[in-house]
Length: 205
Image (cartoon, rainbow, N blue to C red):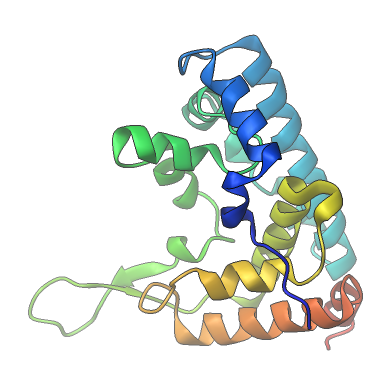
C-alpha cells in the first residue's frame, strides 16, 4: 500500500512556501483576502463533509458540521492566521502558545475526540480521562478527516492520507482506546476501498 507525503510534511514544498510568503506580507493582519480565502476553505470543507455524511446516512450531522467556524470567536481569528495548506490554528499556536480558536471549537463539536473527556471516578486527585465516543460521531470524524485531507491536498489527495495522518498523530491517553480502534478500522477500510466505505457504513457494514 502506498502512503504519500502527509500534510504536515508539505510545509517545505513549493506550494507551502509560496503560500506562506504571500501570507507573511500582511504582517499577520486580518485582511479582506484572508477573509475571502478562509471563508472559501471552510465552506468547501463543510460541503465535502456534508457529501460524505449524507452518503453515510447522517444528513443532519452533515448539515450542521463545523457551524461554529462561522462564529466571530472562531472565524475572525482563524482568518487572521489563514495558511491555505493547513489549519490556521497551527499559526496561532506558534505565536501565542495556544489556539483560542481550537479551544472554542473542540468544546462545541462532538466529532472531535477531544470533546469526549471527563473526570476519572474514584481518583484521589481530579484527573481527566477520555471517554468512548458514540458511533455516529466517530463516523462524522472519519468524514471530517477525509474532507480535511481533500481540502488541503487538492489534486494530490489520495485515499491513504487520512490513515497516515492518524498514525502520525500521538493520541495514546488522549483518545479512548475503543474510539481509536473503531476509527483506525474505518480509516484502514477507506485506505483500501475509498468512498465505498461510506456506503458500507450506511448499510451497517
